[in-house]
Image (tube, rainbow, N blue to C red; front, side, top):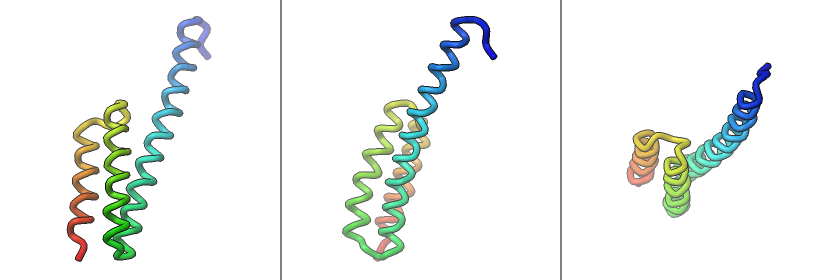
Length: 87
């Protein structure tokens, strides 16, 4: 356990930031899952609609520093490719 005041504050700040990052990551995963569910169901219209939402969430996460920009770009690329590959 930290004894120094600044170290105690760092612990609190890190917990707050970790909780925020976890919430944002969860939101991104949920939006990607919605795209994958639509793809598996074969519903191209729903897949494209949820793709737009997923790309928005991923870009927001990258802007906030939760994901590295290349990681975000890779995620967008993979789900876009999957939606475009639908019949």
